[in-house]
Length: 606
Ligand code: GLN
Image (cartoon, rainbow, N blue to C red):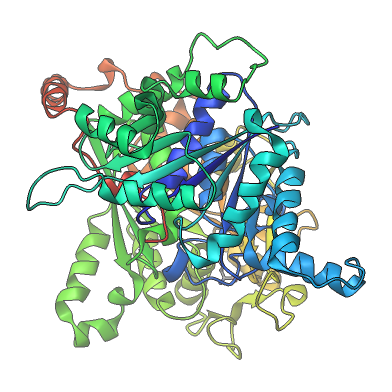
């Protein structure tokens, strides 16, 4: 087993996670089996009780683990399935050590950070690295370990010390260290500055770890002279310094890294012997993806009516799933965020501008998405958004709470239950159309929801979603909820055209809803975004995007076969569009790749 430790310098939030997963992608494309571990040095046991405002979304794994959103990056980039133990926190390590101490495993010794905590970290890493993640039961060859935060943080110290020891435990050929640092370019001088990188490398070395690769993050491409300077002052060869500037899409990151010789360096440094020879189409699919992304001509406007819209990371997987599907239908995603509460009447009196702006965005959208969420604030706004989508026949996708809002709206306006609600919002509502699942209401917050992978059986063949999933009998998707559609009322809903076409194995839980007589009005109790992949978009999102850009009917007529339209093709454009495209490519070439969305390569933690 080979280990690559990825650390960060200067500040967090510069894309360490994306760089670590890109490194994994490159190795995987070279025929090496890759797994990953993310270390978050906070005391929480897991991310389950986090507010999305603080850490962004809580990512859910197949086994129900509620983990840091960076694990989502690894799963998407490497197309692997991780387990809850692939996310280590200080809390988990201490809990493990304290449990051992209580059992008397330390035979009366004083239990200390060194060696007990540091040993526990090393043992954990060695154990988890061997767990197969590819679905083929084969042990991985390389484990990429990303240490959250930056070098020098007090919280990270036991982990840094653990890896200082670990490099000797596993020997030099099996361990290397990649340090991701920032090269800022202050406006005043316009010069790229290497001093912050120099200090963070000095700090890393002071703690006993030497960088094998230094990845310099910057807004513009880094000058050769700057690379040389980093090499000189940080005591590494020039080939060990990589520069990653802001790019037009994250798909370009592995390509740019590989152009700087990463796989060759890693193969030599870690004496890797890939199982296969380098595939002919090495990194080809990433190149195609990145090129297609840069050439998109048409735009589709989706609004996300949510609650945590101030922080994009709160909906990280939803945004990724939308991007995967938009790319699959050859449209650039124009995503707008609406704060659900802004759609409510109260906002009209408090701040009419905000209210009208929110409604303007809602009514101009090609598709409306209501994502998952918790708590009462904003639910009335979401119900109003659902009502607009339903009555105006705008494509709608409701995820988890989004499905629950769709059910509430339908009950109020179609079933004559004016005060229909969820017991999450009004515990003693007269018309509880969404109720709490008894076994998941234990009075405790952490880890008590219906979590992880569960089976949904299709109840009927007359289902758009069944066809979108490829005409299968059942699907398995990841869940995270406490409330459900009230099974006692399902017949009433179905009589009026709101069909629950997918249900849990016992038939009790409503998993997929489709509204008859609407071009696309779908709600799912699970979170399909967690397993969407750049090259395998999630079917509910894909259907939603097809509908939002007016391609769903054509897709249905063609018998749900992938059409040439799904990837960029010239025949897909009018002459005018083609001319625009040619012009755009010319401009892009001139501007080089440097100009682009900086947020694309941004991690969390800032
Ligand atoms: N709050 C709702 C529930 O617990 C929805 C959860 C979600 O959207 N993830 O059921």
